[in-house]
Image (cartoon, rainbow, N blue to C red; front, side, top):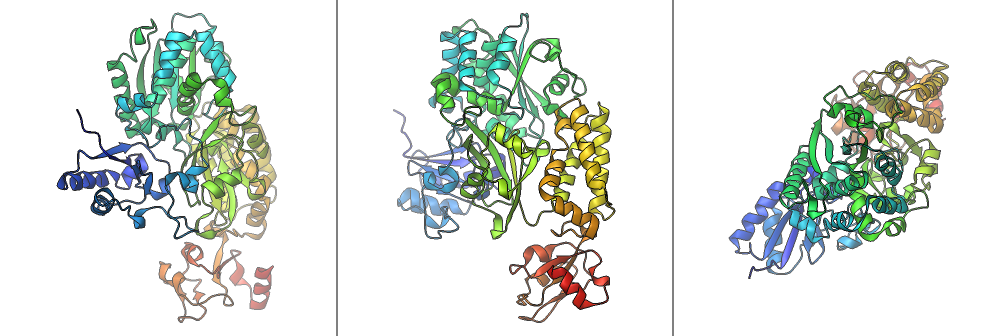
Length: 617
């Protein structure tokens, strides 16, 4: 009889932790276990993304539920000797809450995890994504068996409609309704398509699911394929996701070998095969009709709708496209029922949502929360608040197609309806947090640069309109802004939204509109005072040191690349304006808020007293 290991160490093998050295950590553990003849007793498993990216590389010891963070190869020997052999967990390598230096919680008690509810990410950090046996051991493919052997297509669709599942790719269209429309179309060929072309800056939700739980995507596609009558499926993944492509391909081959893909799946009479199509990284190919044109070998450009893809999609055949997270939610819905799924969330926004939490936040990572949770809970309870104790300024929700939500709206529930009211969108789940070091005009310019560059150029409003808006923002951030520019931006934005062909152009102005709506004073300061108060736009800022608060610690001088800061220790320092290149290092480094910003031409004034009075105002 095979000896079962008494301890399992689950090492995070997502892209982030691999970049941080988790493969070398795994090698060190295997070497140490072999040296102590423990290889049969201790099982080392490389998982997908654990989620708590800020603390990676991560290792979790089961059944003890001990969470080790920021592991290095040198830590392997200590953990093997102390924890695995002597039974004494190594406290110095365990997570400690920043506000509770001596509290050492097990994984389920760590704030980042305890507020989450995992459904799409139900297998996160618990399985080897390259072993189908691990997935099956956690009820994998049971939902597919139920759908194929016990349910009609109409019954599958009914259950999904009861669940209220909406597309998690951005638009939020009811999944069951889309399937129902395609199901009713008569055709000899239909396609089921998975959108893994995640392109939002700061987003890694779909990538993490494909890397960590690829079989959940395949199982969801099998169920959806049966519901609409598809015989062929494609997973469209951008080539920049090599680990996701590798693990999906392994999963497809394993499923084929076991009769879970191909002809007559599980003896049900239903046949479906799935293959991967690698995209070249064009953001516009996240739009469904552009994605389909790309698979056909054509340039990825959207086409007018109607006809909609459920009637005329890939190769003009009826097609259904859902994103990775949507498919990952389907198996538990079929297994546990639509009512179970809608028990979380709100009436119109049911279930949970996966978000990639990034930016100026302590707990960067991948999270899954019930729909309806307030933004404040996500940012402060799960995210651990703003880095270095700085002040929260805004959160960009929905990527380049979304908008910036200010502090006074942090109690907004995360639902499709409530977030739209703020001017942003839930989108696919990118959530970028910004602190008071961010210039909101510069933020709007950054996102518009992205959408302008990614426009396919097919329609004039998007191709030309976004470029004109970008030129205006560039002028404002470089000191050439003038009266009326804000109103011109607003007028252009409305025209682009109304006249663009696809979702890229229709949503591209959102970051500009929301920053004008909530941070208009920053635009006015850039235009009227030639002053970027956040110190981001180099043409519109002067840095100086307040002698009344400077402690003379020297931190600013040490980081200045131009040696423009001087002063005696424990006495106020000063900046030589002729040497300053406005790199902002001193401004970001000072812990006493003694480095200040002023207007571009503030030192051209003759009277210092007048200058100081203006700055105080």
